[in-house]
Image (cartoon, rainbow, N blue to C red; front, top):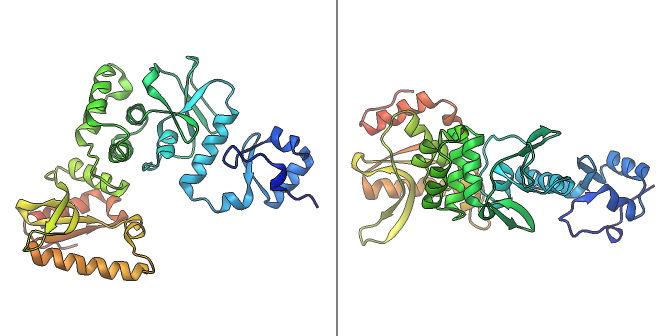
Length: 318
């Protein structure tokens, strides 16, 4: 039975194995087919594979990044990762953008969409291209503007906020480049996205909550508001707050509990600690708390009515 030997494989390319590399290591096409069927190899795209066990251990974002790497290695013309594929490389949130790999063509030829790959043609400045993790990619600023051109407002906002939070771009850089591109019909929503953009958002859920408040004509909240005890010591920080109205809002996504869970602490322990934290905040400020989860974002009108009722001091009846 054919088995794959690590000692015969060149692993310089982050576990992306091209067909010609497997052949050079002594595996013929029948070996490759057998190993793929057996699960020793996983096919990323035509002519590109990775180890099956390695693939199984990756999360959704890591899988997209690996496929993007394979696509870049397979490209027949010079290109750089762009849009959501570049955002994945930067490690910032990408929401509901599908699994296609997006590339910026650097040869000025026509763009095309085929085989899970979207090639974009456009004016690329020298400052628009960088290298991240050994791979060419559009800069943080260019990636943000490309997301505005590719996606609707909420999807674009998620990634733009992520890039701002990661300090891969700045509001000033975005405003300057957006002004230069204002006649591009694909960037018509840029004023909306950039007007909403706030790098203090720490997750996709927080960005979408900010968008919901704008879309449903709610007062714009303050973000990442510090809570102090009687001595002035900071004891907590809340996602959103309307201090003048005596309300704060927390978005409870799964990533929040994973991110802040202490060593040895279960999810249940983290939830209980969060409840005690809420009680502390309410006791210190006298504010009322609103908690949102992902399901609430799927019902924006109902969620907005609940927030509006709390802001006005009314009792919410679901």
